[in-house]
Each structure stands twice: as C-alpha cells, then as structure tokens.
Amino acid sequence: MQKNPRESQHQSSETEKEFKPNILTHQEETLLVMAEIEGEAWLNMQRRELENPDKYKEDQNSIVFGLQHLKKLGPLADDVDEEDRHHLVFSLYGASGLNRWGFEQDGTVRFSKHQCQYEKKDEILKKVQELGFDFY
Image (cartoon, one colour):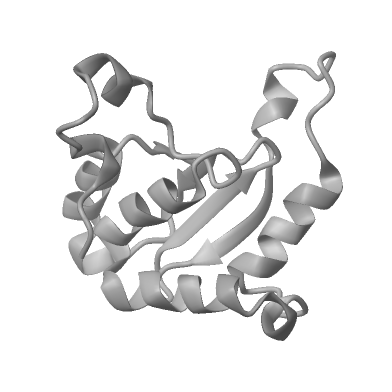
C-alpha cells in the first residue's frame, strides 16, 4: 500500500499537523489515509469507481455519487452557523460494510464511532483518531 501522506519525508511537521482529511481538497491523500483502516482492496475499488464515473454515478453507495452530490451542493455560504457546518451530506461504507465514513458539505471526512467493526472497535477508533479524523 502507498505511504500515508501524513508520514511523507518531504513534509514538515507543521504541514503534517495541518492535514485534515478532505475529499474535495485532498482526494487522493484522504483516500490513502482512509485505506489505512479499510485496506488496499477497498482503496482499489474507490479508484476503479473514480476512473469509471459514468458506471457508478447512479449508485448511491459509491464515492462517485457522493462527490457528485457534494459538487452539486457547492461551497457553504459564509453566513452558515457553525453548528450547521458539520451536517453530513453523504456516507460511504468501509470494506467490511460495518465501518461508515461521513462527509460534510465542505468535503471534511469523519468516521462513525457507532458504526464500526464491533470486535475491533477500540483499536479502530484509536487509529482513526491518530490518522486525523474526527468522529460523528
């Protein structure tokens, strides 16, 4: 699997701290970090969907459908309340079908602490947090 972008030797520690998973502004990097939880097969599936958007644009469980939805909604207005900024607009299943990733309108990616592999929950939640994701 490709190296986590947060661990790149070419980034300063300042840049690493600034990285927040965002599917709109850092698509490939975000998918790579998500794959630290979901695995390489899951990552390859996301890439196949992105390479064939016409095939997946109607599939509500695809990353293509979710990205289309985010782009259609467009950026948040400046006057949106802070509380409203964090509403999820689509979700994506992890490799097991048990993990769930939520996406905010600005592209921020969060992980569901209630919908994750039960038998590995503590381990997964710790790693997700270490990778820079917030929870919902």
